[in-house]
Image (cartoon, rainbow, N blue to C red):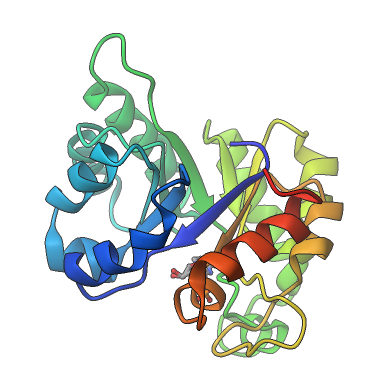
Amino acid sequence: MKDSLIIALDFPGKSQVMEFLKPFEQEQLFVKVGMELFYAEGPSIIEELKKQNHKIFLDLKLHDIPNTVKSTMKLLAGLECDLVNVHAAGGSEMMSAALEGLESGTAPGQKRPYCIAVTQLTSTSECQVKQEQQIVVGLQESVLNYAKLAQNSGLDGVVCSPHEAGLIHDRFGTDFITVTPGIRPAESALEDQKRTATPEFARKQGISAIVVGRPITRAANPLESYLAIKSEWKGVYQ
Ligand SMILES: O=c1ccn([C@@H]2O[C@H](COP(=O)(O)O)[C@@H](O)[C@H]2O)c(=O)[nH]1
C-alpha cells in the first residue's frame, strides 16, 4: 500500500477500460473500480483486471444498515480485491459489521482486503460541512472524528484529502492508511473537487496512496501523464 498511485478507472464499460490500459502493458498498476464501472460490468471486470495482474481498489463506498453492509462485504470478499471501503458516516456499528463480513467472506489462507472509511468526500467544502451537514466543529474536526471512529471500529484507514492526511498520521499512527483523491498537478482543472493538492504536496504528508482519475484518464497522453504524476509523487520514476 505504501507510496501507491491508484488510477481511478471511471469509464462507462469494459471496452473503454481495455482501450485505456493498452499503453500501460509494461506497468503493473494499482487501479480503482468505482460505482460506474462496477454497476456497468459487474464482478467480471474485477476478474479481468486481476488477470492482467493489476492491484484493485473496489471503491463502492458502502453506506447502509449494519446487516446489509456485513452481508455485502462477505460477498465482495470473494472478489479478492486489495482494498474496499465504506462511508464512515454509516457509524461505528456499520464499520465493525463491514469488517466482520469481510473477514467471514475471506477464504482460508487468503489475505483479507484492507478496509477503509471515507471521511468527508474531497468534493465537499468547509462551507458545505457547516451549512448543509450542520457540523458546527467544521471540516477538519469532522474528518478527524470519522478517522477516530474508523480506527476504533478496527478499520485499516481512511479516505481523506491530502490536507488532513498529515494530522491523521500524527494522531492515529503511520500504519493507519490514508488514501487521498483530489490530486491535481499544478494548473490542471479542479472540476468538482474542492480539497485538492499536487502530487508533491501529497508526498510531503506521508500519505499511503494517492488516487488520480481525470488528470490521467482524460490526458492527451495518459501514459505520459501517469509517469509524470508518479515521478512528482515518489520523486523518481520506478
Ligand atoms: O472523497 C473522495 C472519495 C472518492 N473519490 C473518487 O476518486 C476519484 C477521483 O477522480 P478525479 O478524476 O481525479 O477527480 C473518483 O473516482 C472519485 O469517485 C474522490 O474523488 N473523493
